[in-house]
Amino acid sequence: MFSPVCYLREEDIMPAAEPPLRVGYVPEHFSTPIHFAKKHFGLSAQLIPFPSGTGHMITALRANEIDVGIGLTEAWVAGLGKGDFEGDGGYRLVGTYVQTPLCWAISTGAQRPEITSVDSLKGGKIGVSRLGSGSYVMGNVLADERGWLSDPSTPPYSQAVVLHTFENLRRAVNSGEADFFMWEHFTSKRYYDSGEIRRLGEIYTPWSSWKIVASTRLAPAGGPLDPRLADLFRKLDEGVRYFNEHHDEAVQYISTALDYSEEDAREWLKTVKFPDHVQGVDPEVVQKTVDVLRKAGVLTEGKGLEPSAMIVNAS
Image 1 (cartoon, rainbow, N blue to C red):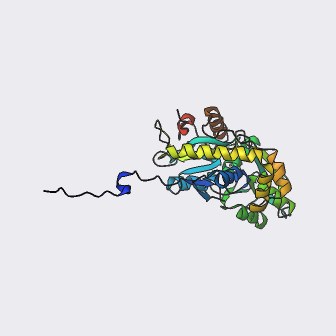
Image 2: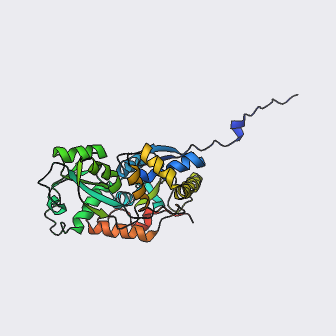
Image 3: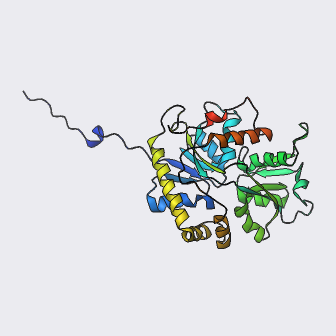
């Protein structure tokens, strides 16, 4: 009597391959090392651009539309520190992408003569990409720096106008829908040069400006990081190293594929520093960010996650 023959397919005995990570990023000059990691070092992640910024990535992480986000420190921290979310907040900080502060330019419309200085913005309408975005958070930091938060009964701005994109923000300050907005200096500079918008001033973040976050499915508290993150970190490290060694190629990419002049790209290179190893987050940086955001009225002590709970560092 013969036993029945069992035919096994390869897929029956081999574990299914993990899908590539879905990585959200802002398609600006800061994304150049990500581009190099993909072009030169085989980064297998699916790169998903978010021109509307970090606030949009927070929404996408919580909706399971992306696995990883590379964006602004203050927006990530504010998103977890407010506590206005269900569940675990959806993501944790796992890496540091840019070590240097970000210079936020303060802009108004070219034909808004009634707006004469930064101080004349008090009580005006601030344009933001999204509530909770870096442009929104830094508006509060500006208000704190200028002393506009001293009277709790009088908000520093009459309205936060949500406009989603940089193009909409530029349009709004010229139409009067908003009085001013804040965006990264070199991204704004081209439109100062063309006369579309007018620069009023600037403010620097008091912290290193870009962090990498991962969905809590990939970075659970107390648990190991998803192994795909280790490969992402390695490829980004390679992209950063290549960026540091090939500035001419970086300038060519920024001035052709992105919305910058060659001159501005070279000036930006003098101001930015990426870490040699992107994995890991300094708890002191997150604590300082929380302290400043609490002072600025963005966060309230006792609500949301504490700084130490926002981070998952591999042991």
